[in-house]
View 1 (cartoon, rainbow, N blue to C red):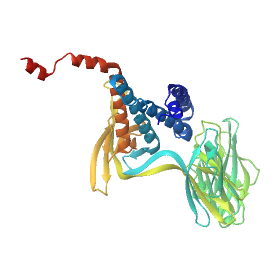
View 2: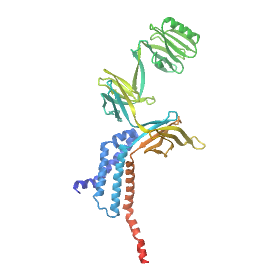
View 3: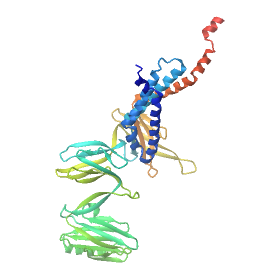
View 4: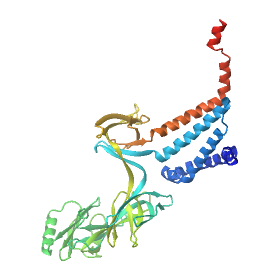
Length: 469
């Protein structure tokens, strides 16, 4: 049915502004991708409904333009139809690649065995309520830091920080036998001004190394035992250290050793102690007993500080909590604790891959890298298959429709390699290749069809030659 509306959708007047819009969007998307990365551009543009609608309208325009010229007689019309049909197939194949294909990165190490977890595009938020209700949602972080969706299972997702660090403090409460000391160390000569906690628990806070010396905390039952310990330290002092000794009554003693000798005494709040390490002084700012650890995630704007990304969430009762990347985090709630985790999106392959060897070849006479190669073993326990493969740049291997290619490597650790694993349905590949062939054949038919036809017509058929003879 050739109605005015159909003719409009298949007209050049509709095609030109449509193509101009798509071209402008693609140019802008390429520039934007350089600023925010491919993940954001994929989500906001290529996988968006509005861009899909534009490509659908282009496919409609091409299809109507081709079929309204039926019957296709002559090389020009045949070539025109083949080219347009080929472009429609390429659009369909591209849509399939964007929405149906799966691609991810597979990190491997020689000393960690086989792995089947690939990191795919996107992030996840996993939540478990005190009642045991669970939810797992794909989340998308926009360039301005906002998150979609805005809530998951009662948790509001307030924002995102690209770089956060974990700050540890102590507060009153917890185990009655735990002691925590907040120490302040200063040195005008070395320009140092730092705070450090010592605590009996967790264990890692009993002994802290500062590089030039160690800070140690120990606990004893009585003042007599503390005096005996100080005498033992005085008789066997080696190295630089500061040791605080807490009694069960709450009294604190200290012992310090440096190149200037040994000294000890009673440790009191806001009373500086000269340590003998250059001009370092130590001051006890706070003593807590009982004490419990208080971890906080703090966003930092200084890019020289190495941290991790995190998202800020809020419970229905108003409690806010940062969720650091890859760490399950408990959030206090009236009914108990909410367990939440901000994690990468993973996919389990139906087989495992182990890195057997990673080889770096260098150009002769120099340290420049010529080639790097991963020797891998594919382990498929379901099919009882174990297959050794070799993968290097631009030379992937295939297994059951999965393409395994060399992606990156770590120059600082040659036992590590990262592979790219990709799979798309076979019909998508066939659709794209068929469309590409039709476009090439169609263009060739339009421009060279008549010439080829005339050249063929100049040669008489074999049957005519036999009759003449």
